[in-house]
Structures are given as structure tokens and as C-alpha cells.
Amino acid sequence: KLEIHDYLESTNTYLMKKISSGHAHASCVVANLQTNGRGRRGRTWQAGLGASLTFSLLWRFQCGAAALSGLSLAVGISLIRALHHFGITQAQLKWPNDILIGREKLAGILIELQGDMEGPSTAVIGVGINLNLSTKIKQQIDQPAIDLASAAPQTINPNELLGVLLNHLAEVLRSFELQGFTSLRDEWTKHHAYHQQQVRMLLPDGREILGVVQGITEDGNLLVETTSGLQKFASGEISLRGVV
Image (cartoon, rainbow, N blue to C red; front, side):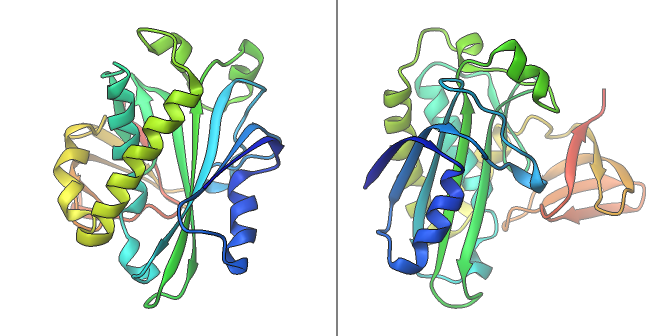
């Protein structure tokens, strides 16, 4: 079920409000313009008309929220597969939920969950992909950003991009529900921009931890070799940065 809106404040907010009213499984809401799109850690998704493809997908799981660790990483794989379909093979993953080209952000993922930890749960999976960013919008983004207009070998029709993305999302989400993140971990690691590289982990209390990325656990946590030994990090409020 696909809804296309000229504009919404946020496709994620829109669908989160629809969960309790029994909105259909696999409902997708697209906005040509989001006026108050949200990113991870309270950030605002900067957008202009035609600048981004922004959509959210409602997916109902029979498992509880506790079993959905690694979901944002699984979604990242579906984005990588779709981008490769269009010849953008230089796209890489940044733990836990960004798509990069070089060290510049192309796309982001925001997942919100509703339901109990053990019983059926619902995920609203928000995706934003930069299509054609103006200089003004780039100046408002708090990190280096790139768009498909700059990265793609040919012009990409946003409608076709959405269709390919949804096909890959459905395939990956079905696999994730049956087998968890385990079956996708090797593929994710292969595309991780910072695998075996030195990184800075920025913690919520302001501390920084330096280390070298060693891999990903079966539930999507990041393994980093630090001066204190091998440490495991859950996404939460942690931010990862490369070390130049």
C-alpha cells in the first residue's frame, strides 16, 4: 500500500500515529517535501522540494522488539543492494544507519518501534536519500553530504528508485524476520566503510574512545579493539567518526 503526499511534517511521525488504528502491514508513505523530517539523535533532516527521496515503511513483526536488534543494519543492506542496481557501487555503510560515498553522507535511516519486548511489534522504517542538494541545503547540514546527482553514472528516476528500494527492503526484512541479522552480517561487513579502520566513538557523556573496528556481532553491535581490550558498542546515542 503506497501513499504519496505533496508534503508532510514527517513520514515517520505520520505512520507512528497510524499504528494503533490498524494501518496495513507494508504500508509505505512518501513525501515530496518533509517540513520537519527527523534524523538520528534528534537531528533535523534538511530537505527541499526535489532535493531528497523521503519515505517510511510500516512493517509488522510477529517477534518482540527485543528480537529486532540489528534491524537498521539490515535496512542498510537493502539500500546498498538498490544503489548497486543503479551502478553506484562506491556506496558504503556506516554503522549503524548511514550510507556514505567516500566520507560524505548519501542516505540515512531512522527506525522507531512500537510494541512489547516479547510480543508482536511494529517498526516504522524511515529512509532519506539525497537526490539533488542545493548549495544552501548543503550549508545547513552538519556533516559532509553528497547526492545522487553527483554520484550516479546516469540520471535516476526517483519513482524507479523507490520501487527498487521497496523490493529489496521486502526481501531483506523477510530474511531478517526468519533468521535475524546473523544471515546478513557478512554482507554488511563487506560494505562497512570503517571495517578494520581506526575510529572515534563519541559517548553520550561526552567521552571519546579510540579504537580499531574489528567487526559486528550477531545482534548488530560494533566490536572495537581499544586500549582497554575488545569492546562492544550498541547504537543508542553513540556516534562513530573516522580518524583522519
